[in-house]
Length: 354
Image 1: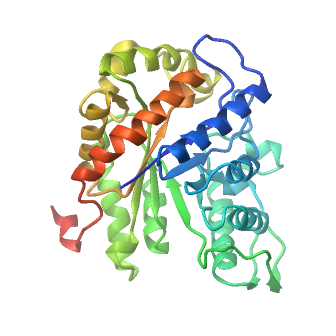
Image 2: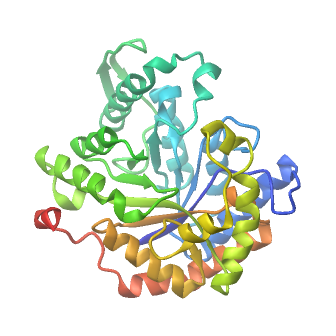
């Protein structure tokens, strides 16, 4: 199983202080380099257009990281494709692939916030139609050097060449989803790897949606081993489970009571709710290395097998040194425990009937 980190380039820490932009970015690049040295498989940068986060241009951050890393795969988490030009998205990630010598990926999605729509002059009523059309074009560009295509929201292309081409023959494109059944079906029909963002609730409740994805993929003629599932969740690892919970709660409570929570209409968070999410059935990956490794295994079993797990830590406003230590524990202690035990993604169609 691949294990990685996702970051939104948060500009706060648990001292409740606003870290300067240049310091926050420098620390983020240090964390990506550290994750590479600790043996983690992936590092993803999100995309937001908000004051709290510095990730409005994720490919720029990933390109800077490419120069400081050697083996870790560099991905978006997610690229808000609805608000972007697929030609430029492909060109940016193809360039990143060249800079990183074949380590670029992207996770594309519709995004969990809507500020990109007015910012780029888009109509929110076209929310899904924009994404569907742009995903179609992005895949055509990925699969062919010369593209002929027409749609509603962008000028047509007539045997137009798109350069540069990446190192990888087929640049990996994952589809990032939340809880909308149609999104799971779309990923299955297209045969794209699926990244499920589980930011709350109980992981096993997403199993019917993952089964829907796999069944849609099989019905569309794709092979089971092509229908890859990953999971993104809040997480934090410390030497003891109590330490991990206490340290993450302090920053999480601040973050979840700020503008992000208000914009989503979320109720005030409580410690009891946080502890429930950090418990056996909850989505959060919080605890000591042994506890988190066991929980990753349970998550994988609950979803019928996953091939990638990504920790989201910096939205909990944790200080840089704590994040660095957590990355070290994930690389040195969690990953060996997980991969010592895992039998991941070895599924047959019969698993859908379990």
